[in-house]
Every structure is written in C-alpha cells, then in structure tokens.
Length: 124
Length: 124
Image 1 (tube, rainbow over the protein chains, first blue to last red):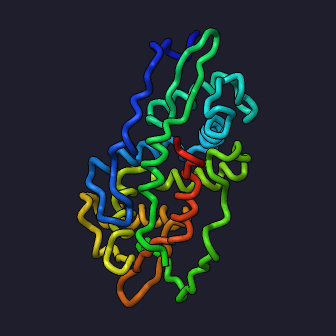
Image 2 (image 1 turned 180 degrees about the vertical axis):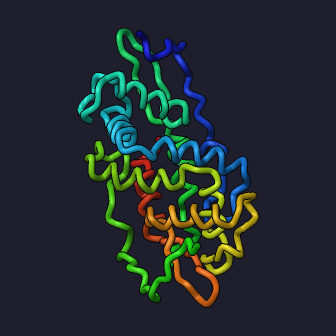
C-alpha cells in the first residue's frame, strides 16, 4: 500500500527568485487566476497538522526530512504521508526517494513567493 | 437579516510589532497550539473568493473598504459579507460601522506576523 510515488532524481526546478504567482496582497485586487493559485498554497497550510509537519520539515537539519523523522505530531504514519502529499501537490514541498524512505524538502521559491504576497508596502 | 454586528468604535488593539503567534516556519517544529493559531489565518486565505476580497480591501485607497467598494468579484453581497466575516474572525480584518456601511480594514500586525512566519532564514 504505497502512498508515495517513486520519483526520478529530480533537479528541483528552482526558479530564479520566487515562483511566479501574484503581487503583494496590498498592491491591487487579485485576479481570479492569481487568487486560485495563491489560495491553493494558503489552503495547504490551513490545517494544524499539516502546518506542524511543514514546520517540522522546514526546520529539520539540512532542510529535509523523511516520514521517519517527523512522526511525533500525534497522527498515524499514513496520515502523515497523506498530509505530506497534499503539501507536495500545493507545490510547498518536493520529494525524492532514497532507498527505503521518501525525503521531503521545502520549496524555498514558493515560500518566498508567499512571504512576498504578505509583504506590506510601507508599514507605518 | 443583518450579517454584520454593530461594533462600538474600536481602537484597534494594535500590538507593538506583530501579532504574537509563532516563530518562522523554518526555525523549529510548531507546537500544537502555534499550529492551531497560524492554521486559522492560513485557512482564512485558503479560498479564492476570500483571497480576492482580502486583496481588494488591502489594496483599496486608504487601506479600507466597505462591501459597496468591493462587490466586483462575481458573488452576491451576502456572500461577500459572509467571507469578510470569516476574515474578521481569523483576525485578518477589523471592521467599523460608519453610517450605513461597515468598513473593513486589514490588520497590518497580523499580516506582518504571517509574513514573518514564511521568512526563510538565509535563502541560499
């Protein structure tokens, strides 16, 4: 009952700066398309368990972790795998199989894009 | 069928810097409590219509808008009011009634807190 796909060794497609998504939220009203893209990322982080797993991966040594490293959030391993898959689908994590385990890594360009979204112009 | 509460003129409780929530996602694994708080904010932005409305308010002249200003996202006014209420409950917007209309304003400290959450330590 494999929950993870075997991936070829990916050269993660790191964009130059940030994932092309959307302007800062304060710049102008989002178009429907921009809102779809950005909402998908926010939604992926809109679940407490998923957010704990994401921060566990993001803060793990070397910026990557396998399911074996981050199983202490009080849910079963299949549930962990399910949530990691959701984060991957949202483009927030990339994964790579090495031997028995699949390793997850935060996609920094996407994180940077989300951070940029939330930036204030000139916070008084 | 009023969808909005009449609020007293609130002095918005602006915290010194950012809303006390959570460390950057990359710093250490979130606790259950931190994840609950942060997930609520992310979830509020995890809907395309809500995100469009939020960016409409955030980018509106003077940093505030009433329902009358932001009705062009293709949903009914009650739906707009419903989504604005959700954003308010998540602490992302504050509101104030002035005459006929309720005006919504982005809570900058919360936006800053979310941006801080997503900051990378030293993106290579």
